[in-house]
Length: 241
Image (cartoon, rainbow, N blue to C red; front, top):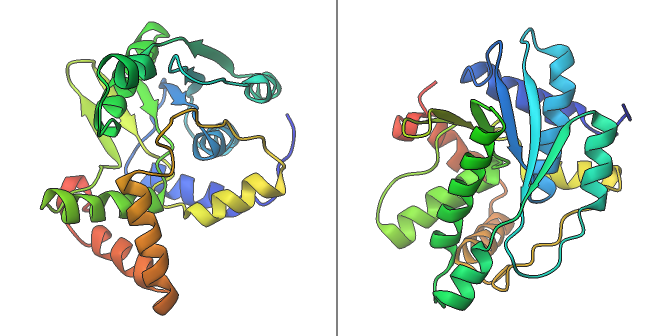
């Protein structure tokens, strides 16, 4: 298995999240949804932690196609081969349904729901009892701000979510990991990212929030730390440690 540069801090963050929220137990079979730099980093981290954690668990890698744009998954195939992880590419028509059939003006919510459903179904077919998503600390903060500013509610995603209808647990082991650390890791190891074929990529409300937070942080570099600290000290969405 290849060695990776600059992984120590990320591994430490992932290990802490797993331990704080009891994300992984003996016998788990975990499907990791691979869609970009964050989930690639997560996949590598979980593979590393198979050695360090006192837990016996297995990993499956899954990528959903959307039926639009072009996917070059050669790098991911080779990476999974090197990591000795089974890789499944699940073909879907989610993009065609959202953009061509439904012609959604605000497509993100429907697309996300359909992708979650397809990933969960694939995980069940593979015999997995858990799905790991690549949401990192900045995603957590942005989701809180999105819900406050656009939905009028104080809410963000949970570290662990149980889906009773699917009998699956969704875990987010990167929730302590800053996006900047992921970018450094990807760059240091010359990892090839998956190009997002979505036609609204970079034009969403989430991108607006990301840009807004970046601008605010230019005046106060502790803004993200303060928001993250507020989440940790709260009792919203299962965040009380």
